[in-house]
Every structure is written in C-alpha cells, then in structure tokens.
Image 1 (tube, helix red, strand yellow):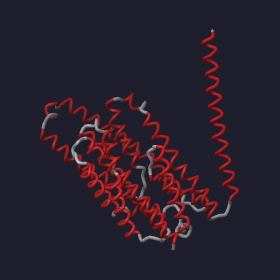
Image 2: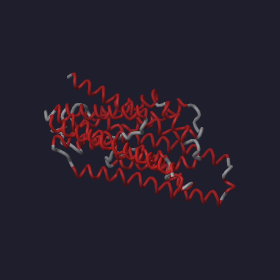
Image 3: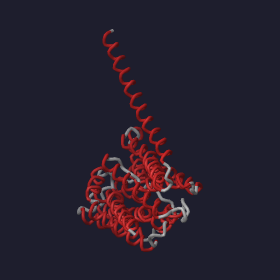
Length: 360
C-alpha cells in the first residue's frame, strides 16, 4: 500500500513538472510577442489548454501503459522504477540546464525495464522511434516552406504590413495556435506521468487523465513563470506570422500523433519548427547555433540514460542480478576514463605542437 501511495505521489509530481516545463512554454511566443502582456493570464491559458488536452490523452496512455510491455510484466514495482528513473533524470537534466523531452525519458525507462524482464514489443518501439525522427523533420520543412511563402507575400504586398486590422487578426490567430499547442502538449504528455500506473492497473485511466491534467495545469500556473519568461525573451524576435506558423505546425503535428497514440518529444518538434522559420532568414547561420547541437545530443542521450538506469534498477530489485549491473557500470566507467584520458593526451599534443612552432 505504501508503494502505491508513493507511486501516485511521484506520478502527479511528475505531471506537475511536465506542466511547468512543457505546457507553460507553449504560450511563450504569445507572451514574447506582447500579444498577452500579463504573465498570469498567459500561464492560465496554458494550464487550461493542458488540462483540456490531457482529458483526450487516452490513446497515448495506452501506448505508454500497455503498448511496449504486457500488463502481466508491468507490475507496481516495475511502474515505480519507471517513474523514479523518469523523475530523477528530469531533475538531473534540469540542474545541469539541459532541455529534456519527458516522452523520450519515459519511453527509455520503459524499454530498460522491458529489456531486463525480456519482454518488449519491439515493433511498437521502432514505430515510435521512427516518428521521433519523422515528425520533427516534417515540422522543419513545413515551417520552412511556409516561411518562404510568407516572405514572398510580404515582398509582393508590402502595403498590408502596417495594417492595424491585420495585426489584430494575427494576434487572435496567435493566441488560438498557442492554445492548440498547449492542448496538444497536455494530450501527449499526460501519459508520461500516469501511463505506467494505468498499465500496472494501479490507477483508472479516466481518473488518471483528470488528475494528471489538473496537476499539469497547476504546474503551468504555479511553476511555469520562469519557463514562460525565458521562452518569451528568447523568441521575442519572431513576428506574429512566424509565431502562428510555428505554434500551428507544432500543435497540429503533435495533436495528430496523439490521436494515433504516439508519444512525441514536443520540445524537439517546436524547436525544429523554429529552426525551419529561422532558416528562411539565415540558412547558413542557423546551423551554427550551439543550441541546435545541444538539442541533437539530448535527442540521443536522454532516452539512453534513462534506459540504462532503469535496466540496472530492474536487474537489482526485480531480477536480483547484480553481476550484469557490475559489468555495465564497469564498462561505462572504463569508457569515461578512456575518453578523458584520450582528450587529455590530445590536448597535451596540441600544446607541445604549439610550443615547437613558437620556438621555430
């Protein structure tokens, strides 16, 4: 009973953080463009959108809860490991300042548990991974093409640019697309928090969607201020039309994936959409951005980190197999030591070469 209570607390705390980091960010363009000037109103709209979306997130919950591991293998203990690993990985990456996809971390943890238990629906997993590549790429090309078309329209009809009526219309459309993005975020991300418990038959799906949605909304409203402020400042250079294209594209793509039960890394989808718009203005410069390189690393590293940790914990607590964990840990430590040694040797060679060049 104690374990069930702890899992319920962890799941809803996870949902609270999802709301703070994910749903709040969906209104960043609206806030940054000063369409909505009051932070509290932007957070409230984000929370409402996330809550309403969560109520329709049943398909993604089924994928997280039953689409990768069968119900008889997904026990309360296994669900606890998945939630624990997801929460710890999220906390760690927040501390070191790396943006994280909760979907990738949760799927990684589920796969780690599944590998240890030797029970994993590989076909479903490969489909999800394929969508993790296809959807962000699609977001880039859609926004890139849309950005080019908008650029041509602005060049062809410059008289419409200063129109107050057009500005008001674009502002309304931007708020609508922001709400759509928040709705899609809630619909897709609520499963990361409650999916494992639903799969373990600890939590009723409909109740979980409601309570998870409420905590997503609370997280957005109470803890999303800094995220909103950061996102608003970073993307404030975007025009109203750029914001509509980005939010509309991200929201529709994630919404479509959610209908088919595909958990997606929404951060990567939105970022790819922003890069697509940015590429229309500076094609060469956008690829030199360090943020792009960082996100690419996170795409690969975040699910792998949670996979390894979940696998090791399952081997220890559910399989009582310490030898495999020792071997994996030794391999990781050896790799890190050799990598640092190689890096140090390379740096010493560079210093020696520079010294020789200075002498001659």
